[in-house]
Amino acid sequence: MREIIDRYGPYGRTILIVTHAPGLLALTDAIKRTKPNIETFYRTVATYSTLAMYIAEYDGSKWKCSHQ
Image (cartoon, rainbow, N blue to C red):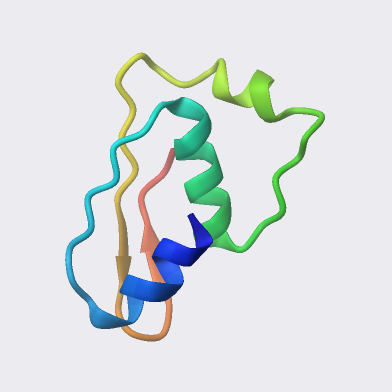
């Protein structure tokens, strides 16, 4: 996830990533530059709705993110 962000984020283009809940949590952690908490990872994922979406916009210097 971090590689995708680092590679395409600076271009300011649209990237659509379709994933299951664990991938969504990994992506949001990567965008926020936070280390995943292995102890609570799956408990957190279990709270996600069946269809979850996360919107993040990169303005060239920082990310603006929707709430999970």
